[in-house]
Length: 68
View 1: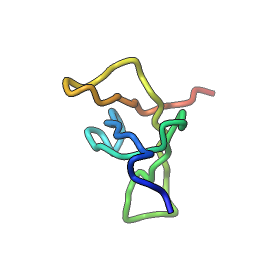
View 2: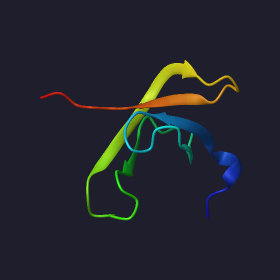
View 3: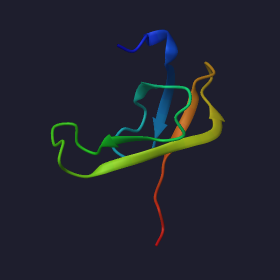
């Protein structure tokens, strides 16, 4: 079982989860969430850290779009 104190809160920017705050493990370098939480088998969106922070110090992670 994961200890909640081992996680950090980030705020997401862009994509369908814009403005949402989620908790992740500090060692993660990206997080991937379903574009539509009701459709677990649909599209997924990847977020990666930026150098920005919210006024309260929370890290801002932005939607990552891979170019081909």
